[in-house]
Amino acid sequence: MSDEPAPTDHHKRRTVLKAGGATAIAGLATAALPTDALAAPAEATSTVATGVPITLKINGHATPLVVEPRVTLLDALRERLDLTGTKKGCDRGECGACTVLVDGRRVKSCLTLAVMQQGHEITTIEGLADGDDLHPVQEAFIRHDAFQCGGCTSGQIMSAVACIKEGHANSDDEVREWMSGNLCRCACYPNIVTAVRDAAKEMRR
Ligand code: FES
Ligand code: FES
Image (cartoon, rainbow, N blue to C red):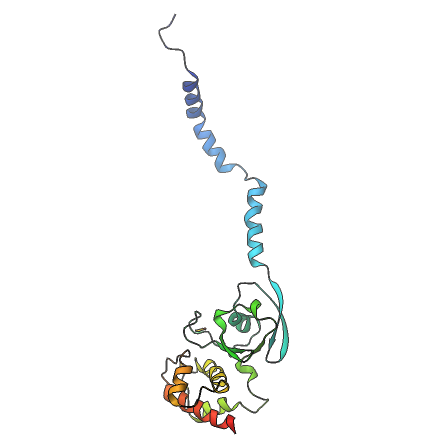
């Protein structure tokens, strides 16, 4: 009779695990994943990418389009509808380059989703002129040379149209205050203020 202790269940398990370790690891690398595990992420991705059919009223025209719910009004205008007059500056609500009118009110289109604007009247810079006749604010910006690079200009003009209609263009200081959400990196502010004041007089006639 041997003095060796009889292997316990614990010893047996360790031996089996040691011997089979390499095989088990190799098996893990090559084993096919369950079908469910592969299907789940694909399903999640397709939910994110699904477009929603909407109709936006832009410059007087009902415009149907399909957008993902996360698409901003700015990207819908520029990337989906080719209305590139509305500019993307900061894309986070700081510069005002993307200003459009929604029901006559100034809105930074980078801060609102396209799907939220159904049923509203959206006006962009492309909808401001009446055929070949420019809007008085557009005329005034040209007359007073109120731009250099033009990056901020469509936003400035849309903002000025609303500012004048709101009755906030009665003094230079008032224009500066109520247009303060529209920045100009070229620092054309004196000319912009003059243009807005001049256009306001024109629009009151
Ligand atoms: Fe919208 Fe700057 S691009 S505020
Ligand atoms: Fe260049 Fe205003 S004209 S940013």
